Length: 364
Image 1 (spheres, rainbow, N blue to C red):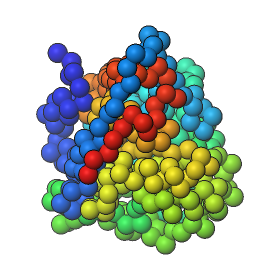
Image 2 (tube, rainbow, N blue to C red; image 1 turned 90 degrees about the vertical axis):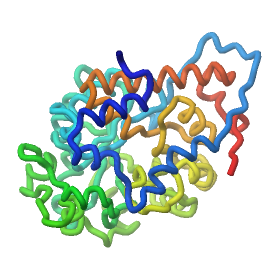
Image 3 (cartoon, rainbow, N blue to C red; image 1 turned 180 degrees about the horizontal axis):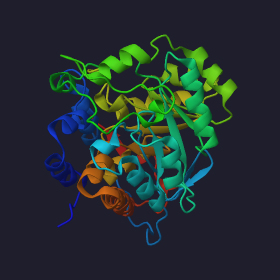
């Protein structure tokens, strides 16, 4: 029997994955307080449904950066998806494209950005495909990644800004996480020969970040990226209104409110708890997206009521990938779409524009 919800997918995925892969995907930083709070924060938001509204014809379509989405959902950037299934990012791309959902590909994918673009754009999708970028110390490598993404048809550059160093993920340290034989950083090895090292007593990913990623990145690097690439700039990892306002001043077109799935600074606030402040600070000058802890269609409804234009969904897509490959990812997306559709009907919302802050009460 197919899982009925994302929590059942998570339980089944744990049985499909190696201990190292499960811990890599499921873990957070430190004591995993933020990891748990991302989900718990949605339970603190209560719904106030409208009644006697004609909801017989519901519309879930929207646009993000002027590109259409069949639902307000994109698949978040997640590294090393071939740990879950041999087709990895290719399966995820095909499922997202077919569903009219967006996708953000990680720099640290296990299929190359060119392969993923071909999978996503076959036949011809309408939803957006973005490339997530980590800025490396080697600016030549960074420039090459940006140029390849542009040439391959990616429609935005999504820069992760909350990882000057990698968060301390104790499960990865305990497992001395590294990629199994046969898997590699497909976007990096094509140019530089870099890969995740095997590191005695340490996570290989932690070592890679320390050696290769640049902790000196500042706002001025956004200007450099804009000077070398015409794609709209999205930044991921904002939790403060003042940072969001400054991002807009630097020409950022969309902001992803995110704490990196609880994998960076443990004790950081839940993403959805930061959402309203960021929306107010941006004041419609850029689009706002949120990720972290979304497990139900009602969670998407709550995020939209707080002002998000769309949401990113991460781990649940991996659980679907581990359980059923492309079909599993497609089913996860369908579950969320169906749940959002039901939640809208029961809340008196026939279209996304009907969802506003009057629908929610936030308790503390």
